[in-house]
Image (cartoon, rainbow, N blue to C red; front, side):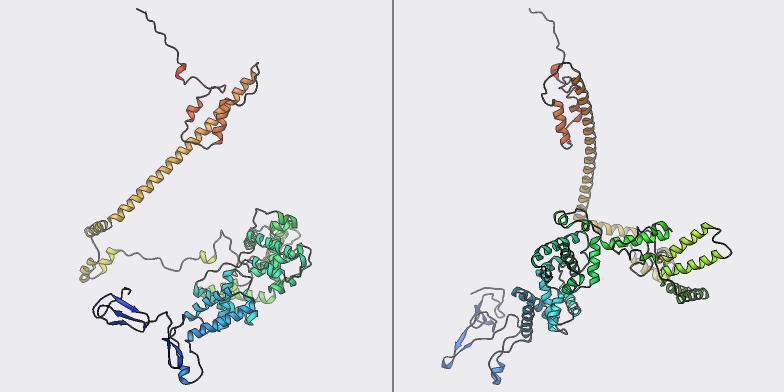
Length: 609
């Protein structure tokens, strides 16, 4: 007999007995069957005619929503049980997961983890409208990411012959549905896997270790952040293979890791600009540099800002000196940013046409803004070149350039500035320096200022019939005081807690300020004591050296030992440095001025009777 919270609907008794054989719950007091045909976990069989046995009850699977039936037996076709459609979906999903896992050579615990994700996908109806193969691949890839295995999404794409972007879209949607936070893939996971395909023979392990060290160095130099792991792994393997004497090209690693050759070239260029690139192989293996390089994007943005600043300041020497060249570019392409394409006749005609349209439509602000926006879409360097051509023509009218050398140099400088392309920002427009404002920021706000309502004036404009109702909406000073008193009374504990916290905060701040003042005073006394003792020590040493009698070196004096102890320890508030300064005289020995025994002896004159 077991008692639970079930009540008998007839007598209200709580003494209910569970009959496991029949799955019924019976009231002990009145005998009423409270529950019947309950699901039980025990399995029983009954013996029929001819010695056959049959199962009592119906079987419900752990993931099923209804029991198995024997409709096929009743229809006369075959033997077996029919299952729920949900269980069928889960069974087919597990079978497909095992199939894909066998192709990828994944162990069984990956299959179990992926099947749990597939079960969640079925419960949330994520499989509806999608191919089961895509969902299975997404579940397996999530399991691989959690276990940090050496498999990439493109491996599942090859195994299933499905576009990798299709699998990536399904994976991202499923991860967003589950709210999973997966760790960023470490490029070091793929080093040993792809190093085995580079035909490195006996040095494969040494090349892999060097590549792992390169990946770690790239992490500290901010090259890995924001980059795909395949490109980092390809660059590290290529550099490591070349460092160990192997003749490897970009194609050797790009066809294995399936990345673009430009990506590998860019990663190598970024590593060349770090301090570690200047080390030899032995130095790189044995030395860990403490310095870290700036992120590549940060460096390129600072270079663009420096170029824009030099163009605005007309600093021709800095622009032509080569100091603003990007070190990641080669020797030939480093100076290309100072060169620009010539403006064609069609572009000149368009520029003239836009200017003429802007003049004709000068009265309409909206059309003018539209024309300006269209004109601004032109290349900034091309606009500067057009303006420079016009300025040169105006300057040459009626003047001889050979006669005025300063004018010729000025025109030459303007030509140089016109040929240099002004840096473009990430938004496709001219770069704006951090200490400058954009054109949008300089425009006045089109939104009207928020108006403030004067309550007294508003009441005067309202009809007299509504005044009584309006007055009832606002409280007078007396009602405000009453409400405040009620609030203070109801929240008395909370207000007292706030006052206590505020008083504690003020007391803590006061103690901290007093401590800071005390520490400053102690530091000043400590410095003064050290200075005075050093001077005394110097004078005492001079006097001892001047004496004619020489003594053997008996070690430091008492004052020197105490001075060394005080100097090596921290400042203490428990030391009176003024009193300590009076303990020694100029010779470094104890001073007897403060001792009571050194007082003059008093002689009393008395007679013995």
